[in-house]
Length: 209
Image (cartoon, rainbow, N blue to C red):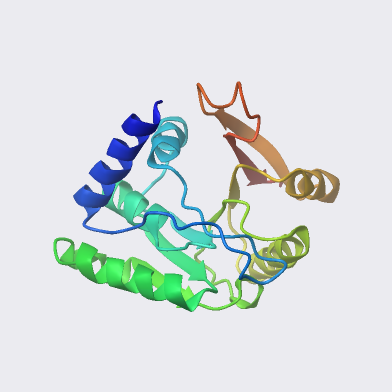
């Protein structure tokens, strides 16, 4: 996909959803263990949902949600419940403003889209959450803590769970493989991009029973 085509797609979906989720220049002004903001490209989301079933009954947590792009996309097309966790107050406020604009046309979205401004590892995972999305948002140390939180939630409320990793870190992959609690269910590669960069893919890990 050319840069112009990608820009048009970004414009199209933001316009459709009545939100503003464009990226900002990368900055070093962020905590050491957290990575700079970069939204999942809409073109990648298109490929993802073509190869992965999202249901209205899903309760999805997006760690490092930024301005909420994934949340609005999955709610609009699949009516899933989506929760965004964002530590950056500026991006969190942008997400809330996007929510207000989005809900002008989606009145029923009130109880299915939520945002929380906090450190990802401090967010308490509720008993309904069954899908967890990561676009390489932080270091392996934070990721390990969140997986621990997910498993603690599982002990309190046993259920089927899946992790979705976009642009997956090798550290994340090695940790999950060595831990053995989740197993790789599916890989979704992004045609035209994966050939040049093997990180351009989604990995879906399913809870092992």
